[in-house]
Length: 240
Image (cartoon, rainbow, N blue to C red; front, side, top):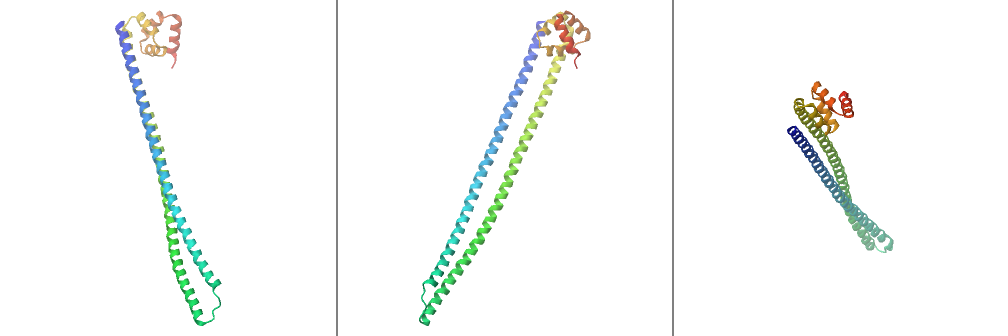
């Protein structure tokens, strides 16, 4: 009897150790997966912040350039107005020619500035379009990365569940094997000794062992068990 009890204890300890080891492994793996996802999300957030700052700085530079262009244009318009408003009516042809030359010179300078401003404006508009396109591309990349992270999370979750189920099935198979081995031993033992062992087991496990015994041995064991316990086992044995 001591030998059989020792075998049962060893099997129970091994089953507990395997289950505990599996649970520890799953908890550690889940923690590592969460850390990896958190690091990826932090990296993406940091990248988004930096890209937004760079784009904001570029847009600010474009706006500053446009403001400068507008300021220069207003300055030349003011100079032209001052020229007409402060110039007295010319008395001689020479004075008229001087005024005309000043106006022509100012108009040439103004045209050059306008052409320059137009070119700057064209470049600025192109730069704005490029920035907007870049923002759109970056936004699509970020959305894609977030979708990939979600997909990885789902795949990891599914894999953990599959691994967990596989381990449970494996553990169940081991338990079934150990129960069958115990049943073989108990079928050869005296019914009273088996009854004493089963009384000290959890009801569910004792019932699982009884179900694997032959009908004659079950009847012998139930006959020597206290009535209340025998009735409880009998009820469990009839359940599906």
